[in-house]
Length: 542
Image (cartoon, rainbow, N blue to C red; front, top):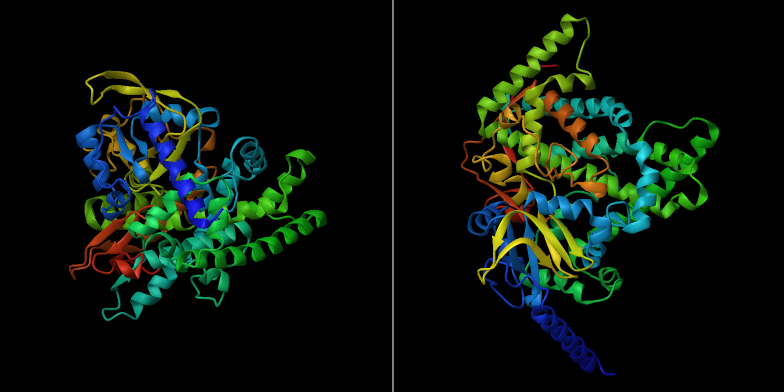
């Protein structure tokens, strides 16, 4: 068959499939939603062109917590921010919903086939092997590592400010520094590996992470988005095959990073196995994983390739996401000086109590007695979730439970929404976290005090942490959420007690771009990648 005949056959099959989906009885066509701006591209560019939360607020105001939207070639999808619906999808995800293969294969270029992407029995086996390394005790054991890295960052800022014109204050791109510090923290705590990012070590692996996600996702075009979305029309494996041959700069950088990661991870795994045999095994996550894995029965154990996949997964999940969360925390403190002052007052008061008892500094257990610190972190995780959407696809025909009835375009009232097999469902992390029915009429505002006032238990709890979807929920919830929260607490206490943060007076505006989570950029300088310039002032020398 000639190439043009093959292309014609594929197009014909695609059109037939779309026609079938649009005209079958069990469909979502009656669900209200924004008008499709393009049959070819769907809403992809509509989402991409706006700042994070802008489109989500429009949908919430105009259509509520359930809306229909379009993928490429007219495909109909669902957008969901309803807690009852999200609870149903996440809790029954193994049985009823799965990650679409075209999404997983693309993300696998970043993570390999680790615990975040595999499905079914493979996911259960990987999660079982990893669980002993991700408990409460193990998370708290990494606190000293987080302290060292946050102190190293503070020292770098002290050096920078000491050489500034005033000797006390300067505009600093805090995101760049936080990205380096969190890379060092996850390297040391998770793998006993020194990235040397804060010291600008000449490490090819370290350099391969610089703005990697932005280079991959941040330079989108309509054609690029259509290219990525078209993977859904092809069989499993095609996307991986194509990406291995993609010559674009972003994908080429990811392949380079993958090569370095596999080389470093393989060497570390061999070292951890030898330490285990010699009785000198350490307490980093990789050592604990290798030890726990060796104790499993043979058919439950992870292969070396699977452990390498966990290495890449932990690095991405525990590095850039934490850096962005900390970045937006400092930005909100700069925007809301009363919040910053209240947080600093609590830190100072707690430290005075600690020293009055005869101790020198904070311990990880002190954080639980700091309600305002907990509230600030929870509020940042609510307003700035690391992942904007959780994408799932229905395995079979299903009925989605709703918190509120949905009135269809036909006037029909739905108490439960029929969803045909193969429907792509975007669980909107941002939309749910801004849902006024869950968080109150001021849900769009950054207000940590809301967490001090909350007493009622949610009717449909969805997330593993504080009813947020930020760390997902159900059996596929983020296995490392405890580590992330402790790291956030540690860095904030270290930085806020030593520095104050304010917005620069140079008129620069921050744009919250959508690619690869919420990414801070400067308006007019988006091409430069992630930035967050803040006026940082030294408060004390510690």
